[in-house]
Length: 322
Image 1 (cartoon, one colour):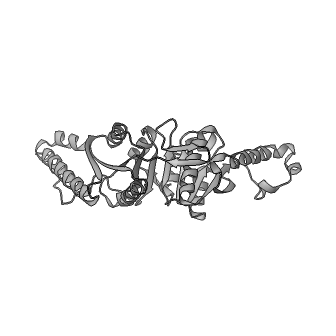
Image 2 (cartoon, rainbow, N blue to C red; image 1 turned 90 degrees about the vertical axis):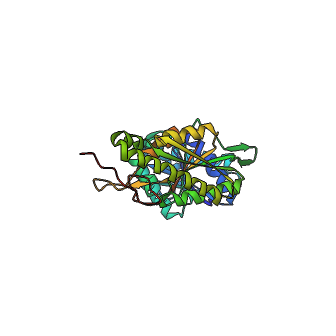
Image 3 (tube, rainbow, N blue to C red; image 1 turned 120 degrees about the vertical axis):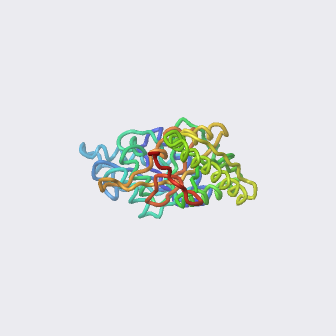
């Protein structure tokens, strides 16, 4: 499924948490790993082959240390039997990672949410939003310590996925995530769970407009129930569905913990910037990534989202009573 995997690293122990996921998926598909490092200074294109005497100059001491870190990482047993290509560039982590995804035809990016320097902020704030929002491929986020589904023993790395939780809202933006969740579950013989969260703003609506609001909330519940029953049928009974009400990220995280999920799959809904800058992720996705008890696979979707959930039939918007 994932053949070309980009593993951004700052050479810390935290970054290594993402390494085993990159190696495991590459080994499973017979693919390769792009070992990717972003530096603040200029890096020679032939850094890995330069004579050591050239790098012993005091001004180049950091380059010599960088090369040693790359060499040590390339010798990691996790990479045994896998094609690995080191790529070192100068620039800002967000833009360089996004560019590499396009240039190297990357299928998956594995990113740990802790580290030093620029990568420490890679998933949060404007830099992180730019990476995830613009990446034309899934991004697997890992936040150690959390539930782990990759096990490395000796010369083998096993992907042990028992339960996958798909967070859906039935919009077109969730279709790629749904397809990927089904495929991953099928490939790994894992249980597939799907959750739809009716946002707490519907409850607020019913309080503000008792007559119309309560009616809209009731129709919403019925609509979601019908959709989830249909979703179960599409999976030939192999999908377990959950319907919750409240803050979406909180309910997704809660259910993931309750079912002991190994992976959350969610579509990346992206909002256009109000000020013409980089597009931004929805706050709920960021909160899922920050609070999830397991890795989160963010699957790219449309660039524009609407502020309210989609309905299968027109809804009457309640008006204030005069």
